[in-house]
Length: 421
Image (cartoon, rainbow, N blue to C red; front, side, top):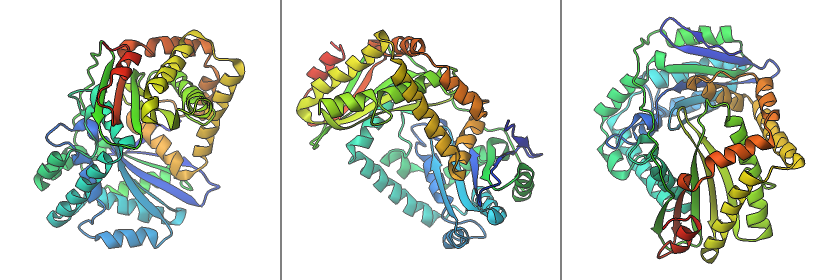
């Protein structure tokens, strides 16, 4: 299911027809993002994404907005570590217009010097804003810890210095290297057939020629002991992010990790939320999440905690991680976690935009499991023994990384909890 059609110029096209819907969501995906950068051009993917909304050779910025929103549609874009995506959601009758605008933005952006200067200023303010948001910035520090000296450890928006140093010539060279049909994917979900999307794509991208794009370097993992980094700052709460290396997006164990995430911190009935927040009142907010990349992954627990409660909160969190390793999850708790995961997936796939994003990320990454039934069967197959095995593989002292932002003068109590000398 969902083997993409490949056009003569190398562009891949795929669609998920949803005939009962009135809308169609279309995305143009490019294999370009933070992992394709270095310290010198850090943030170039993000800046280029912003500039593509500022006008093309035949449409100015306001025309792009009016042509989509004047038909009741919406459009957006985002940059991640491995991909950049430009997307529209329109009525099915306007699918041709939507893809024409997306292809125009991707192939013929104006990249005007004056717009570039303004957008660099906007992004620098965005960087400053994130630094003032410890709940966000603590994750940037964590990424740098987990992948030191590597693109995955760099901030997606770049640094103030790197953004300032970016030039129009550099942007054009980067776009020329990565924004090629052979490095792109057009995906749609909604009231559209794949043959129609292929025809529209062939027309919209007819002038584009292809060349092979560079690939990113695989990560190097060499952690041998627990690591802690403290940023002392006068905040109302102390913010923590605890990260562990985990399986990549192609690993069949990823479904075990998904259930582990639900059990520990993905919702309000998860163990960490229930125990750390509801029972012990050690924090207001605590959650866990998964980062999946092509050659690695991460499991992250984050929380905002009262300064004086940090040692106890860390103690309880680590105790729950240890419990996963030694105590089989009960049948009822495991069943609820599976039903939550399956329900969230099925809810998302009812929406055209969410379905397009789900399918597009899988296809552009090279994943093969597109059958929802097969995925649900794999979730159902996860056992308590699987969870214990993964817990023992992942929750080790030499796989713990902790970043902290708060008014702490030293991190002695946190070091003690993490067994760091």
